[in-house]
Amino acid sequence: MRIKIFCVGKLKENFYREACSEFMKRLSPQRIDLIEIRDSTPEKEADEIAKHLKSEFLIILDSKGEEKTSEEFAEFIRNMERDMAFVIGGPDGISKELKKQADLLLSMSKMTFPHELARPVLLEQIYRAFMINQNKAYHR
Image 1 (cartoon, rainbow, N blue to C red):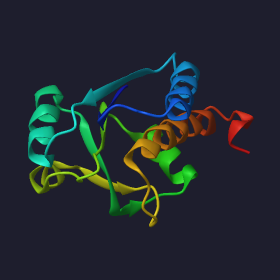
Image 2 (image 1 turned 60 degrees about the vertical axis):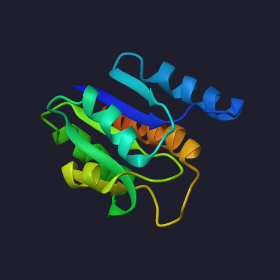
Image 3 (image 1 turned 120 degrees about the vertical axis):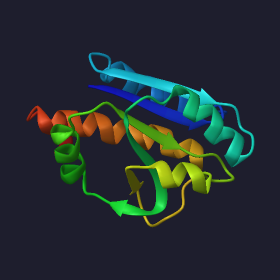
Image 4 (image 1 turned 90 degrees about the vertical axis):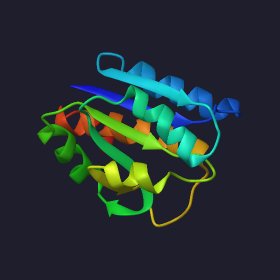
């Protein structure tokens, strides 16, 4: 399984970059691609993301989306039979057209987070899901 993570904008803070780097290192046996999209309008960002999409199961992070516990997220990944693509929108959100294409709108919380924080949190949850699925102790 291959996982693409589309992120609008670059990480400005070192602590976000360091956290992402650490989880990418931990996930290195997995096939995960981080694709940064230039911060623009939601419509232009969606067009750029669409250029990279193939037939992946499209998951858009959205505060109004479905919530999952870490264990439910791990089961979701374990049962996935297709490559996946996650989209973390920018400060202006995600276009309605791209949301309509999504196979799943996923909420990380009912709270609002800076889009920069969503990247390390998503990477950590993907890593946690792999650890849960391998019965490793990280998640405890």
